[in-house]
Length: 101
Image (cartoon, rainbow, N blue to C red; front, top):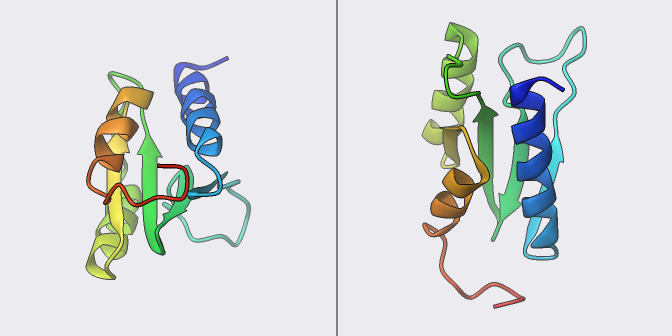
């Protein structure tokens, strides 16, 4: 398994463990889709979170960067993450009044 695939799998498992407070899914890239779409999308407290997952040395493409900026400009939260720990840090930006908290 490629490093990014392993990281993505760990991140999805973590986010899914937070259901029903978090709805997360992997975005499968297919022909005709929005090029640059993030690897994982999640909804937390009604707010969209777009995660572009990279290995320690991975870089985003111009299209991926543009997608992340569009999410942020539309009121969502977007980030390039390299570990589950980074995702946990991002979730600290949300109030603690989640269903399971």
